[in-house]
Length: 378
Image (cartoon, rainbow, N blue to C red; front, side, top):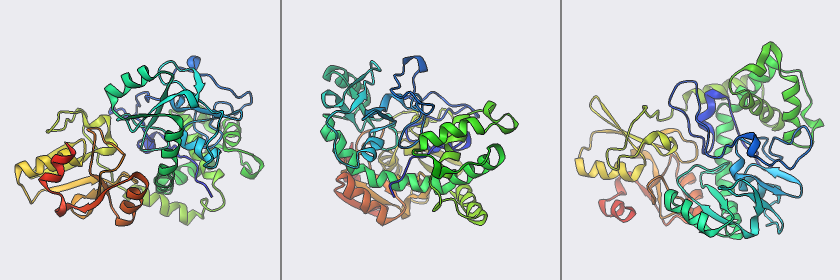
């Protein structure tokens, strides 16, 4: 069964692909993909028109990566790939990232792999109506310019890996949160009576208002978690015991928390802008944060301290893992905030899957990373 997307509560906001978490407690910065509702074109006419037909996510919130095909509007190229079952459509539309209007996808210029987070993928994909606009965006944010056919092909290469990450995040707590919200605030519904998750979510919006839930912060994210909990039934609903275990797993899945204003000591970049790439090093009582493995290793070699505690973020799960036990993929087509990167994984199996999907040239362990290898990535 093809996986659908995830979106959790405010407490699970860090699970969003490309979402920029505000470092002020309880608040969120508007994501790059988001626009004012008055500037968004929604092609649907039903009650579910504001939600992705494939994943259920809010189309306005992820508007800059929206695609339209056969009268259905979806939140991302990942969702379009799922909707079309891997068969490239000839008449799809995409939102022009700059001008916000719908344009012919086959005439668009896509910037793939820029430093700005994407939607439903770690390998971002943004479209423009002119090559000049794409080049302007690329100059500021990096990435590679290509046509729709190539971007669609890359979405296909990313698909399995992105779904693996999606699955891990759902099982890491979103189902548990959705179950909790649904049972406390919603009238009971039969998910099998809906043709799409967008229809289910639209219905939940009408029946999940117990105790004034609709006034709660990040209400749409609560609805999304509840919709996913129901839509993925029966396999992922589980028993109360399973839900409890899922919640415990989420609590144990520690992430690298970047302090407000922390800058990489190598390049000076604000780490909080791209927290999914964060690494850290504990030297005595001092904690240092880096915008990626590459800069961290450069610092490590220059300082020559071998007894430090070093942690990196697993690419798929975003968990904090010991840098010395991780597996790193080099030479792939996925770029970090500073370009070419050593991309970390907790397991060799995940590293091999990623390397296969993204053209990785080599998988190395921590002790196999050399100054020459790091220099080649600079």
